[in-house]
Image (cartoon, one colour):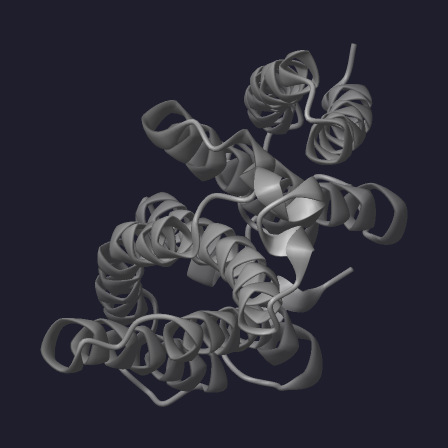
Length: 284
């Protein structure tokens, strides 16, 4: 059994989990919701085993590094963190229908990694040969994952709030009756961002320390660094507006979605479209 096979199995499990959540949303059968979260948890376990196995395979090949060093490995890890954060929120709040809006993110990441990226294990470039790689990547991607969950919740909020504003019957019955109340969705969006923001902050700090170790400077205004700061300011603005100005509802939901779009550009757009010190992360 290789890590690639386990990652493929994970992808199909996440696909099944997503469909189970869709069935739950449309049919309102509790067993499908329970099966959906069970499948997500099973996929997380299989993917965890795959990540550990890939780490071992790296040592067997003589490279010996954590599987976080290239685009394929980071996309796979991103999917893992999304499911981890979602399962944590489900454990806390038990709103199963959110899985229908979060699991697609994890599935798309895994499908892209398995079908569109080079999964070869490669030696680390000199700049990555540091324990700070582990600290920086883990904190950043846990933050990214929390923002992905917040984005999914914000989409749910906008759908339900728009239906309620138009006085549609579906807002209180049928499909939308499966959605949590808008005030709950708004609060969950805030709570997810409250998880992600300090993690992103830690990611930027560990990245600065790592940059000083690798390049002799804490900050060089590299495109990746600049965009990570933009993302930080967007979510800082969200929290500031929420706490001091009472921003809730649609404005908060849209800002959450914009923040996640900026996060994706920071993660993928900068690596694939712009050149800089982080260009090594964009290799296919």
